[in-house]
Length: 304
Image (cartoon, rainbow, N blue to C red; front, top):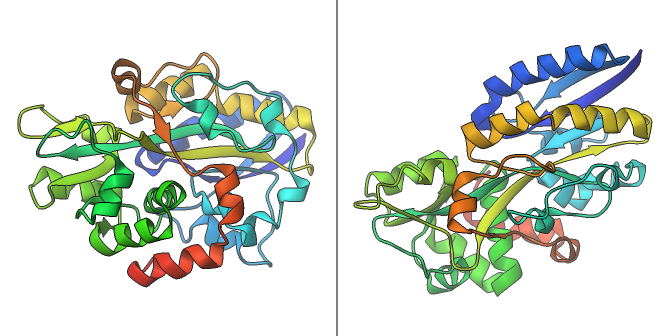
């Protein structure tokens, strides 16, 4: 029996159902000679994965599934295990549709899922660009101070429009603890416009509240799978394939309005029908943005 320790911090709104799927995956893998142990992080747990992995005394796992993007974007964390990663992304195919190719970050991080963040508000905003909105000082509502959603929005604006635009966004926006709080502000008329996960924005009725994709693209908040050389490539591929099964992929799309990256997985309905597209910080940009510089600005306006 091969032991595999998996650290898990995925899409929190579906976590109760995820735990049931993980139990099914464990039983399936056990029949293939793999004993999978899962340690969860994030909302409802003692700490975020990035917080734990920043500590040098915390042991590294064999595999990671994480939407806590600081695990991969903060070089102080990623450098702990980058050199030991297997080229998992070269072994399992992903879609060429729904903007999934934009999610690729080298050979070692396999795109798993993505939350599209779109506009929701009291008037149509089809031609509204997130970058132009940020530069204008508009009081946009968005959420996820303590998770990757808010950080991804700020980094995306920084990449496209520069540090000053990112600072103006932070200074003038209403940033909530969680994305659903930003949605509720717009739903209740407390904010004219919010940038929220599509699963919330799809409640728009097209009469008093409207949904639209930013003109420069829905901001994608992805999750990735990676594996370390502490296990074999065949073992890593077997575990990753089990986590990308057709049943699980369908569940994520139907229940979470998520973009699933596995080849032949169903399309997220709104992205498919609206021909929406994505934007997110590129690997090249992230490699030039020191974590200390980002957090110096981010924490000046927000307290994680």
